[in-house]
Length: 257
Image (cartoon, rainbow, N blue to C red; front, top):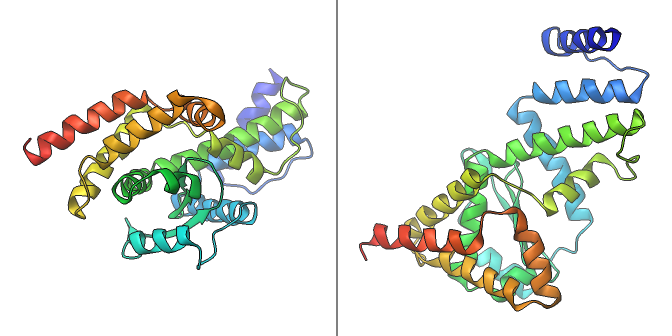
């Protein structure tokens, strides 16, 4: 009963009065952080995303401007400067990972391993997909959820729960969550649809997304270290082959085939 009253008081202080309070017990402070996060405006979440990207850039090898991958990405993306009023920036992370991701601040990071297996049309389809996540506000939702998850872990740890004490900063926790980022089926389909429109508007192959998804599926099926990594990474996504089939049908319908 006392705990319920205390939580109600915390909710009142944070949500109603917007008080900036600090509590001596880390578990209770994590509860405050969760409720504060739920009331944050989008611009605050974007600022948090920018802080995360700075952390991520420091902990990855960024391709130099003279590197082939960086020059290729620049040539393909230089004209795309903003979306929904959010400024875009693109960088290449050197590594064998076959992946790309977007953050709520407009940052898009592409791994050189992905670039090595994709044609320009397929690569732009994936970039269009990431732009879709930004345009549809999926990335803001992810950042808010990732922070709340970190706060909840802090609370369980402080309370002696099943989650051990965090050994990384919240930024490290967010990076870990991003590596296995799980958007809903609706969000993934929405980003796929955005990508299709993006490809058609900008003169790329409308089947770029379908072809990229087929290629990712084949890499996963081939096995080996790379195939295992891809299969594990995309295990949180809707069925890759089903997405490819869906995009092929939609592309054919739009171009009249």
